[in-house]
Structures are given as structure tokens and as C-alpha cells.
Length: 113
Length: 111
Image (cartoon, rainbow over all chains, first blue to last red; front, side, top):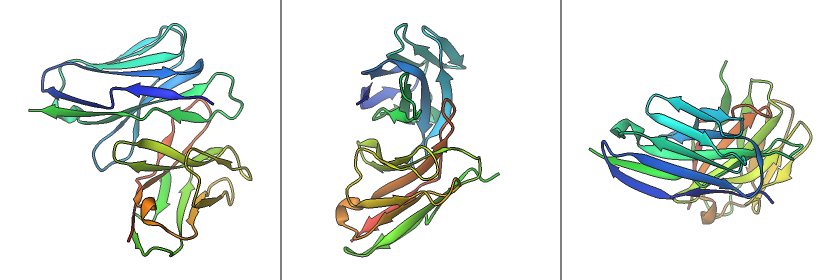
């Protein structure tokens, strides 16, 4: 079955440092989505990438989708304490008829002031 | 437009008791999910429903049952609660290719 692996599991950075989380799929994806979950909250949608090699930016956040559509990354430049939370990637297998989303385990980001 | 609503938000059960977590969405989504989230384990899929009348097991279905009552509602039942089922439960829904929306979570403690 499809697997979506995400690394690292935990990341601790000092405010102002950069942060990157990586997502790898065992199968080719039709798209990939990224979510953020604040402590005590529920996951909230950040962005969706669809095209091979796609790069999207949201202020200090940069999202990339690999050329083979099997991997993705989220990079945060100059982290702030408001970036604290767990970041999840989720993908749909290109061959899936059900369109079920598979989530990575998430990367828990801690930012020291 | 409420999105995904799940109840109860908090529940304490004794071992062996049963309960049902209710979930409803008002976005006309076909697919609905139940996840549990434990520290360091991310979101683990319990059951998935691609459409009304269909359900499929996820990663951790043991000890749970589900009902897709209609397009709006997807309930999760614990027949005989165990301490290992202490967790935060999230219901979610989406349409293929689009954003998945989560409920606010149900914090369940089994003592």
C-alpha cells in the first residue's frame, strides 16, 4: 500500500533560523497538500501542489513538489514563535480511484525565542 | 456553514464502557475519515468512507466500528473501551483533489 514518510519527526530551532521538513511517497502522487496543526488544535490546510516541479510561496514558507511527484518539502525562512506546531504532508496516489489522502507522521517544530 | 462538527469534545470512560463519537459535515463532501492522534504518532487512520454506504479499514481499526449513516454523518463507535484507546480523535471530510477539513477534535480518556 501507499506510504508517505516525513522527516524529521521533531525539529527544535532558535527564532530566526530556517526550518525544512521533507515528505517522500512510495508511489507517484497526483497532488500533495500541506497542513499545520497548532498545539491543542486541529490540522489546517496550508497549500496544495499539483504540477511536477511546482514551487509555491506563502510569505516565509516555500513549498516544493518534486519532478517525479514522489517527494515534497516545506521550508520556512527565519522562523518565528508563531510557526510553532506540527506540519503534515498528505498525498493522493495518482492511481487511486477513491482519492483517499495519505498523511505523513508530521514534523513537530519548536521555536525558541 | 459549520464545516465539520464532531461531538463530544471531551469524554471520560471507564474500561469496558461503550460510546459513539458523532461527526457531521455540511459541505456535501463524499469522503469522510476518522483519525486518532497520539503523541509522536501523527494522524493514524482508523476508518475511511469514500461515499455514503461504503467504509474501509485504515491503519488501526481494531476496537472500533463505524457507520456512514448518510452523506453528512460518519460515526465512530467504541464497543468496549480500553485504556489504549485514550487519544484525541479527529473526524475529517473532503472531495477528491481538494482540501481536507478537520473537526476540532474529541479528547477521550479511558480509565
